[in-house]
Image 1 (cartoon, one colour):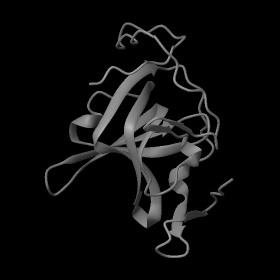
Image 2: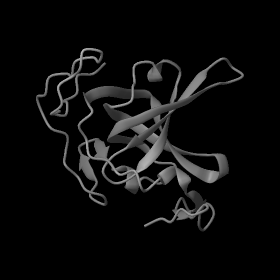
Image 3: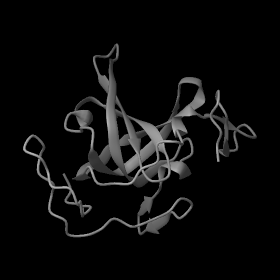
Length: 174
């Protein structure tokens, strides 16, 4: 894997956890609606994601490992609930990409993308050539009230590549 600067964590690892990698730099401190284009890397926050985005960088904390689905082609898709300070979303990783990710890990994906899944709900995933790096654990502020995967998205007008959320159930997009 590529050596990517890590986030400085304030919690020391317990005996049953992997040690945190050394901190030599901070990831950009960004608020929602303040996306950074750093050369070729575009950093986004979860609340700013829209369907069909490609090749961006995102950092989040893993709240929990959810289910693993086996496809008819004998692949595995593992779903995680992940969050940053702006919102939370479902992350889906294929095959071995999910093997070493645990709840509490702070993860950075370079080469992330979004897709639409069941009922046009947004899902975060990684491109085939993406770099997934554990940059810390436990110490990250996150928002667990805005679920980006609960919104149904529609392209309006059709074919325009302009996506707008519509509420599903009690969810409201703000």
